[in-house]
Length: 242
Ligand code: XBP
Ligand code: MG
Image (cartoon, rainbow, N blue to C red):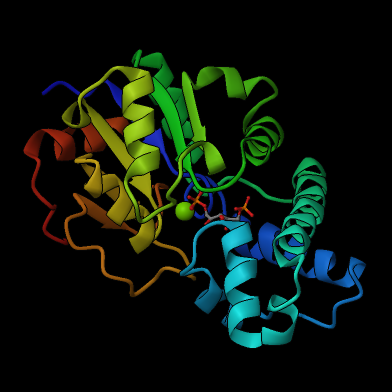
């Protein structure tokens, strides 16, 4: 099947947003709320196994702050903390603090020049996506993406396939006409669950996770071009490591 579209994950794939953006933003939100919680990189690596910022806060409270989780307005408190966190994250991104990972901008340029359709499938919020694309890729880059499937637009987050199925439906494409780019086992589970051939670029948080079924597992896209993606997509087989 001809390759017609690239579907990009955001966090960890387009940029290392977790370490440099989301983690400090969560901690700033806790501090604003007067909560003595300070997630370090090790704990955050564990918490990242729960996708979705609200879900992550809820999981943390249920596991480490049970008294806080038992409050009658707990869900409202989670929503408020997440709203504050998103405000801090947007400020970090808009300040230009989060560069794209190696090769990402070049690959997007190659795909656009070749007439490939582009989409996003992410657990984060749409406003976070637009801010990152506008600040780190190019002003107006959001318009390069036909579909931005993000956050709560689907009931179940990665590794559920919902967000990728949503993107396919909006693209009107079959799964095997697309190629997904992911960074984590949860993301790969979601894209493969939707039947989409997938290339993984690992990062410090996802290194060592199980990427069985990926067409290729790379350290980054710095040495990868569109011809590589087309070759892997055509073969349909995982590339044997060099
Ligand atoms: C990674 C996630 C997101 C971010 C936090 O998303 O799981 O929840 O960690 O963003 P991706 P929010 O699918 O792009 O890898 O707080 O907006 O959820
Ligand atoms: Mg990701």
